[in-house]
Amino acid sequence: MAIRPIVIFGDPVLREVSEKVEKFDTELKNLVSDLIDTLRESQGLGLAAVQIGITKRVFITDLSAVDINEKLRVFVNPEIVESSDESQSEYEEGCLSFPGIYQKIKRAAATKVKAFDLDGNEFVLEATGLAARAILHEYDHLEGELFIDHMSTMTKTMLKGRLKKLQSAS
Image (cartoon, helix red, strand yellow):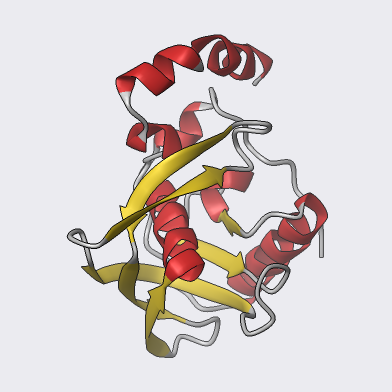
């Protein structure tokens, strides 16, 4: 439908906790269509509705560019059911709301998420590796958390100038 501008760090909407989707209607389908168009244009791996300024509990992931076995997935009102904190992995992450910033982030190596599809059908997905990382990253957005919240104080201090620059541009 439409490519939307991505909200950049510094905009307070990124810190808001997203609201539950109540209706599985045309408005939701249009939102997801915009998320897909925006994600494809920006060549990212995931995008939450809040990143285009809509505080609804919706995100998508599309890892097909890096894994031919993966596909576009839509998550509406997701809940993290399980996360393996004891088996964490560290991997470089970026975020479309933080253009040009990439840092190693520790996250659970596996997760289980319960969510709804566009038609309101509930599903449970167990994910590992990059899929788990993408789900957890996007889920954080729905909670008002950002990937910089997972960085050490020293790393944030080293990025201070770049973060200030993003904030002043938003």
